[in-house]
Length: 181
Image (cartoon, rainbow, N blue to C red; front, side, top):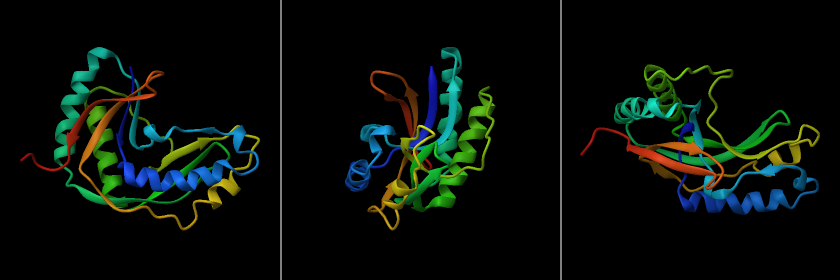
């Protein structure tokens, strides 16, 4: 199954971002972009790719302690940008360093479970909003994100998510951050 590990923003923050995204989607040329669905918005910590079903229990067993090793932290959706003309994204503010440490811990856990992890670029916490067609410049859409900051929330868990067709994303398992109670 195709898996990734992510942080899921709460509905309030997604709703605030959604109002801004609605304005971006009204700009000329927005119909040429593939916009992501609000229920699937997430901050990817690690993309695991296609994982054999037999390996999933090992992945889950390694992710649980990785979550316990990281305390809850405060995060906001803030600003945004683009990766060339390939992707439009919203960024993060607040616990960005904590997100980076958690992403590194998640990658290490996945690698220890036997999942090959190869990062092509430095980790940048982001929430993908749209994918470009390579012909449509994303600057006007990225500019709509300038100055945006959502309400803060406390990130309390990480989720193992399956990427599929129906539903698009499905949480397979989730673990609380920090030591158990």
